[in-house]
Length: 193
Ligand SMILES: [Mg+2]
Ligand SMILES: [Zn+2]
Image (cartoon, rainbow, N blue to C red; front, side, top):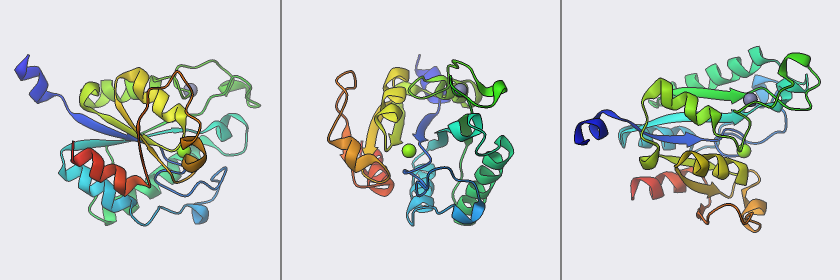
């Protein structure tokens, strides 16, 4: 049992829009991609703390025909590049392109990766050998927190993006979580646990 614990990784799952980058609605051009000023620092600190850093993002704009899957991948390459330029490493990007009411036929499905379902986290566990009970999720929406709690991680709500509004109305099926101003505060909190 001890041996297994030492070979499994801890992770911090990060919501993308409103948590790592400014929420601009449907991000459809790289020029509109704006990392918050502390995002790269936060990722680098989490790396140094021994955490895998994993982005989990719902991109229903793909299902609705507003953005393409290719563009989402391009945006993630750009985020990875900006992180890398600042000495930070992102270990995985997972996105859900689906919607039960999708305009684009191939994405219209009741998938298991649409938040708050935990499919993206389970994919990351398979890829990165993660110990979820020692992992965290940071997001600006309750559906981020619910996804993380369903998977067995500890959630932290940030007040950026939709977080300020969300903080005042926690759904009763979601356990109370720590609420902090932003991702860099969430990082300090996680590293202090
Ligand atoms: Mg968000
Ligand atoms: Zn999905």
